[in-house]
Length: 295
Image (tube, rainbow, N blue to C red; front, side, top):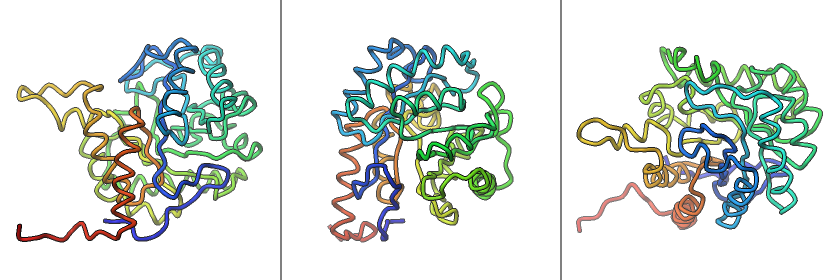
């Protein structure tokens, strides 16, 4: 499906007229693809500035790994990791998102400059989160979620993954509305890899247009994820290592941009910006990508 209508916009966030790029800054020792690389706040700040220079529209700062089986840090430790990074990147002019499930982390992050809360639990992990978002007026990324890292893959059971994810996201959107969150500030995320098998992820990607029924911009987090590693597996079945999945991520970014996805969350910003530029050029020219020639 090639996008024919304008991309949705979210008030107070960048509106470049193309798919946005959300650059990942994991201030963690145990994230699945880059754990420990940016654990020092100074290194994380430098990395965030590099992503900004490469063209990231939003910098997503997180202090808790959500890979399957990860152990949650204490609140104080999560704050120690992320607050200096959010503060410095916001001061440098970045549009910063705080990636957290905890209102106790989101609130001080907003106070030092975060303009988005990226809550992978969709408000289910902390019943204060939606009220905080409503009171602060920041934008909110609401992801489909069925449980914390240590248990989520045990809940990857669906009769129809697309229909069920849409139904469960609609429930979270209704809950956000009851808490007073402005509808035009909410972005949805189908939660690829969260309580999903690889096959579930592919089904979601194949049927993304069905999420239009929710009427909200959609963020896709596909970067370096395990289902790409399995797609690119060696002949012996060994998955491609996480850092060697960037080319596949870029290819998928191109497809997502052509299909009108509002944003992509990625580790490699420049490659994704390049891919989106190609997609945007084709979209602006109205190129009939489904046509064939005899040559």
